[in-house]
Every structure is written in C-alpha cells, then in structure tokens.
Image 1 (cartoon, rainbow, N blue to C red):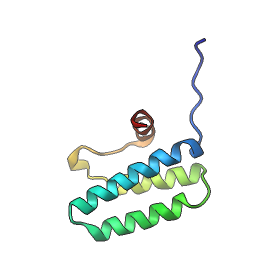
Image 2: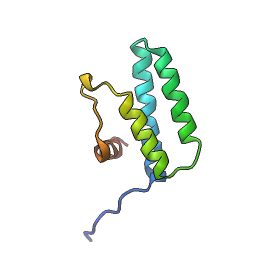
Image 3: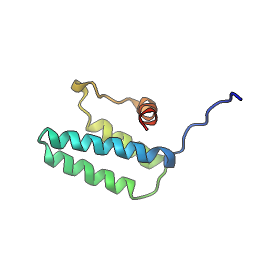
Image 4: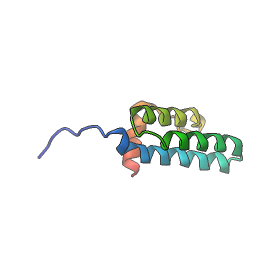
Amino acid sequence: MLGTMEPKSAAEELPALYRAVLDRVAELERGGDREAARRVRAEATRIYSRSWDDRARRRLEALLRRNTDSAAGRQIHGRGLRRRIVRAT
C-alpha cells in the first residue's frame, strides 16, 4: 500500500544527527583543531542529554552547520541534512 511518509520526529532523528556531529568532531581532531573539537563535542553533549524535541534538533543542526567546512563540500542546508542522515543510517 502506497501512502505518504510521515516526517520523523525529533526523537527519531536525534541519534543520527548527534552521530553526524560526532563525525565532524573526529574530522576536526584529525585536522588538528582539538580546541574546536572539544567545544563542539561539549555543546553537542549538552544538547543531546536534554529533551529530544524540535528545539534540540534545530540546535544540533545549527551546531553542525556552524562547524562544517563548506570548502570541503560538506555544507548542510535545512532539511537536506535530515534526508542525508536518514539515508546514511
């Protein structure tokens, strides 16, 4: 039966989004920017350890966007991030 897919809730998307932020932290560490990696990890942990709601999802998305190297082709835009993360899981 074909039907419209309901958008995933923040609670369903947060684990993959958090994983994407941690992947970015690892990239920062590999690039030698340990201070930025520490800050991003700490903020992501604060966000992830609280309510799993739309606000948390927006905050993690913004954190990832602020710390993504667009020169490396990793610029993230709005809902495209969620689709990419869902496909990767």
